[in-house]
Image 1 (cartoon, rainbow, N blue to C red):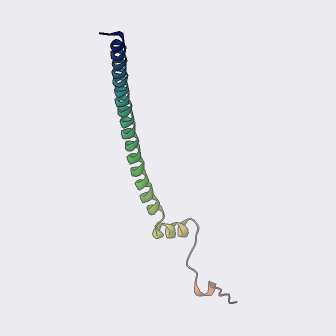
Image 2 (cartoon, rainbow, N blue to C red; image 1 turned 90 degrees about the horizontal axis):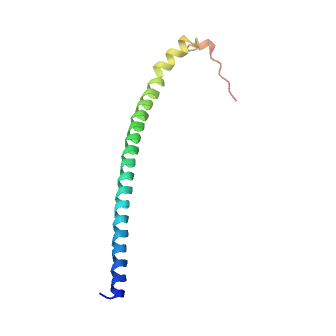
Image 3 (cartoon, rainbow, N blue to C red; image 1 turned 60 degrees about the vertical axis):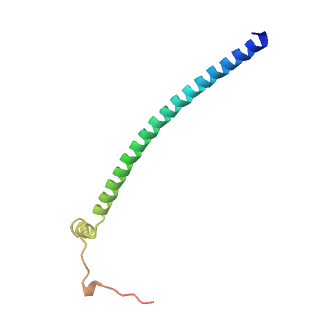
Length: 90
């Protein structure tokens, strides 16, 4: 085997070794990112559930019957009688 062929074989061996290290690193990074993606998807799902609960709570707190009850009890409001109504015309 000549010296030139030996150098080419060593360079090719180093290229194969570098390529193998690159493949291992790419696979490791891929798995790491996949685990992070799954974690973020779980977090997103939990936030969506919480958002649904908050929307339900908001709709419960804002019902007309509840607001009317609070207005009567806490604010002592009432439906005005006819003599209490003042109509202003331009």
